[in-house]
Image (tube, rainbow, N blue to C red; front, side, top):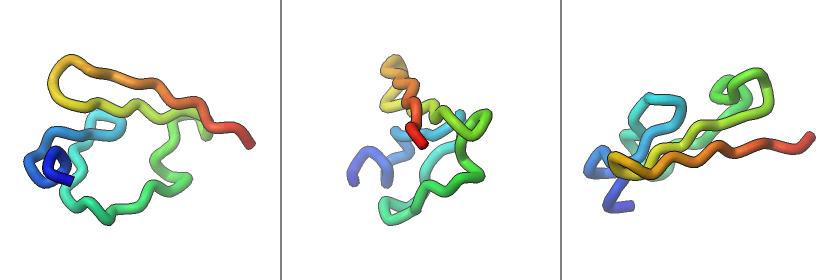
Length: 50
């Protein structure tokens, strides 16, 4: 929560502004992937199973 409030987390290069913000199907890249960045150097590519 602290990282989100401080602007330290982004999804697909867009910062999360509220900790309760939900991820929807619109946020997926090619309906399959999410790129999550935590801090400056930590990137995670998340593959979503259908």
